[in-house]
Image (cartoon, rainbow, N blue to C red; front, side, top):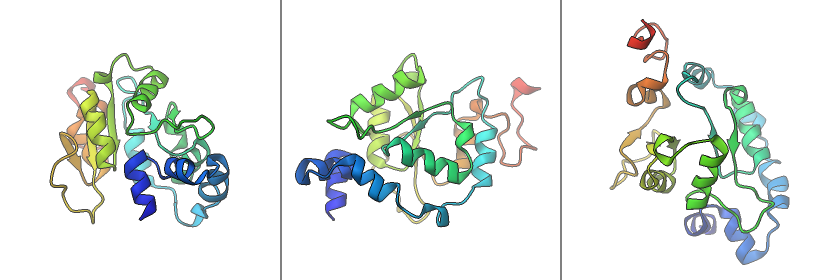
Amino acid sequence: MLHQRYYKDYGLAISGLFVHHKVDPLEYNREVDDALPLDGLIKPNPELRELLEDIDTSRVKPWLFTNAYITHGQRVVKLLGVDDLFEGITFCDYSKLPFICKPHREMYEKAEAEAGASSPQVCYFVDDSHLNCRYAQARGWTTAHLLESDMPEPAEKASKHQIRDLNSLRSIFPQFFRTTTANGIDGLHSSQL
């Protein structure tokens, strides 16, 4: 329960561990996040790769935005087999104190700057955290809250868009995909005809 409290209070459990228990964040990352046996848990995801490959990168820049430290974020996308499909990554830098992480305004500003976004209104965001989506939406980002299949609907939506499957992005943001169906056969955009 301590993890959940620190996550709620600080946006990231490691922030609370540092503030209250003086845990070294880089050592924590090395001994916990980077030491997790993820190779047996996370496998390449062909469906995710197909979705990301179908993004029209002339219209939108795929960018990772994580509260993890860079080594953990890069490791996860590599295990998923999609590490080559992103143009960059904004991560929580555990070497700089105080931490800047989602849902803090400065983290969204950092992501905008690193991704080269001209304004918050050109940012599109998908996250499984209700809190992160709520703050991104309030900042002016177009946001989709990804609900896990076993999660109940929240009493109050975090953002305009709420999805249970990433392929739903094809229907809510069709302008960013070459096709609007998962197999790429149906739903060509008029700009492609």
